[in-house]
Each structure stands twice: as C-alpha cells, then as structure tokens.
Amino acid sequence: MTVTIESPEQTLADTSAPSPLVRYFQLAVLTLAAGALYPLLYLRQNFENTLLQAFHITADQLGELYSVLGIVYVVTYIPSGWLADRVSSRWLVVFSLGAVGLLGLWFATYPDPSMLRWIFLGWGVAGGLTFWSAILRAVKLLGTDREQGRFFGILDGGRGLTEAVLASIAVAIFAHYASETPQHSLQPVIHMYAYTCLGIGVLAGLILPSDRNRTRESGVAAQGGSALGDFIMLIRIPEIWLISLIVLAGYQLLWATFSFSSYIQEHFSASAVLAGELTVIKLWMRPIGAIGGGFLGDRFSNVKVLGFGMLAAAIAWMLFVLVPASVPMWLLACCIVLLGLMTYSVHGLYWAIIDRCHVPARVTGLAIGIISMIGLSPDVFLPMINSAISHQFPGVLGTQLYFVYIGACCLVGSGLTWVFAKRTEHYRFPGR
Image (cartoon, rainbow, N blue to C red; front, side, top):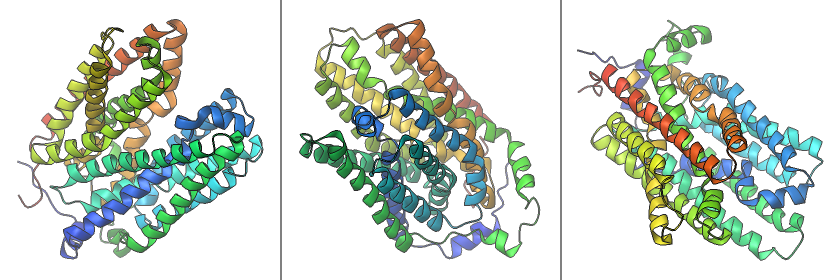
C-alpha cells in the first residue's frame, strides 16, 4: 500500500487554486508560447534553400549552426530545471519569448555568418535554459492530478496547431513576395515570427500566474534543499531513469516524421507539391493525436495508453516500409494520417506520467531537466545515425532501415512503460 503525503506547496496551491476556466485560459497562453517560440529557431524546415541563398551560406554551415543549438539544449536542460524551481515561470516565459523575438529581428537584418553563431547561441539559451523546463513545470502545476494527461496533450496538440497556423501564414507571405530576391521574400516571414513572439510575450506577462516556489522561500522543505542534494535525491529514483528512457524512445518517432517528404518523393514517385501536401496533413494530426491521447490517458491510464500507443506506433512504422510504391495516393494518405495520430499521441503523453514518481513539487523543474537531458538527446545523435545508415545504404533502402530502427526503439520503449506501470501499480491520486 502506497501512502501519498501532500507537500505544503500542494496544500497551499489547492486552497488558492483558480477556477477551471482561468486555468484553461492560462494553459492556452502557455500553448501559444510553445507554438510560437520554436518555429523561428527551426525555419529551415520550410525554407532551407531560401535560407542558404539569403544568408550566402552552405548547407554545412547551416548544419553547424543547428549543432550549436542542439549542444546548448543538452548542456542547459538540467540548469533549466534548477532555474524553473526558483524563478516564476511567468517571467522565464516572457524573457524567452522576448529574447527569441529580438534576436529574430537581428536575424532579419542578415548579419555576417560569424554573427549567426551568437544568434543561435542566444536562441539555444532562450529555448532551452529559460523556457523548456519552465513551461513544462507550469503546465504540470496548472493541471490537477486527474488532468495531467489532457493538459500535456493540449499543450502538445495546441502547440502543433499553433505551428501549423503560423506555417500557413508564413508560406502565404513568402508566396506573395516570391518574385523578389531570397532576402526580400524571407525577411517578412522572419518579421512575422519575431513580432508574434514579442506579442505573445506581452500576453504571457499579463495572463500567466506567478508560480514561485513558496516552499523554498519559506524554508519549509529544508531537507534536501541544496541543488546537489536535490539532484542526488532525484537520480536515486529508478522511475526517473525509466521515464528518461521512455521519452528517449518516444521522441525518436517525431524525428522519423521529418523524413516523410523525401521518402514520399523517392519511394512513391510523388511530386514535391504532393509530398508537401501529405506532410501538411501529418502536421494537422498533431492536435488531434496529442489532445485525444491526453483525454484517453486521463480516462483509462496515462501509462497504459502510452504503452499501447508506443506498441502500435512501433508496429506501424515497421509495416510502413512494406507499403509498395504502387499504392494509391489515397491509401498512402491514410497511412500518413495513422502514423501521425499515433506518433503525436505518444509525444503528448510521456510528460504526463511524471506525477507517478511522487516527485516533490519543489523539484519538479529539476526532474524535468534531468529527464530532458537523457530523453531529448536524439537531437544530438539521431542525425548522425540517420547519416551513417544513408551512407551505408543509399536511397530508399537507407530510409526504410532508419524507419525500422525507429520502430525497434519504440518497441523497447513500450516494454519500458510496462515495467514502469508495474513499479508504480500502487499509485493513487492524492486523497483517493
């Protein structure tokens, strides 16, 4: 029998909790912030060739800039969690959006390549150190114990919806100026993303609650209060390591979707326009899959739904490589929809199972930082794995083997969720 002891900050939060309507409105602002901040950092997804032409840089140079971004993320995940436990999420989110927006305006002036490194370094700090753990911690504290699945599902799904809407606006702006030089056609796109970040930053400052860590301020939780003590306490929790590996397995599904467009063109002989349309369809599955998965998780069990979702996704990705090149386009579109739904349902759920570890609220951010450093490490090594496979097996075969690798990792992740479920089977909601 597991006894759940509510921490002082939980009790305090319960007595002064805002109404559900206010909490959902605050969640909507956090979702807008998450959806608006990262597209500017990853502008290459839709405009890579134009970026190379506008900045007069090579693909290798652009890759180096994104390596800087990935390294900063990995290095700052744990400090990000430490910071989130000590500074209000409201001001961390406001700072991050403001920094990304202002750096975006500098980016739009097309500075020298040597200056671009500083912009990407700044983006890495704003997107990693001051933003990542802060926004996840804010969402976790906003949702009650019975709302974790849907809140994280809404965050991921709403973020995807925001990115899709902004991408549609960006493409429309770019098309309007397409007849001009790459610099003139791309500049208004960058401005749109930058001013959106600044505007949502102002909104966040007005709407988001101040969720300062009252336990630390009052000295109630003196035990384990040091950063080193908190870190040691968390890494001694086996479930923290399990969640880290589950996230690592599930996060690679998202990377697999980045190869959709080229695979569709090479294997199914689709035009670039058709491949783009199918990729957009996949993007619109994110809000449906993530939000739907979140509500299913709250209804049945976040861990069980996550485990079944990872198992289904693993099987689907492995079977996808067997789809013949002669398949009708409508059937291919159905495959893309199915893969998108399962991928994003997994992506929206794995952060919702942290509460089963009974991590004290005062170190929630640090726990998220530790899990992120391990779980999101595919940002660093997965491109190298993909490159190694494609060099060894060029063309369609290399991409198919890459998909099989992703599916196998997800299959392992599904097994880990059952181990996690077994270890936490006595978990109960507080007060239940």
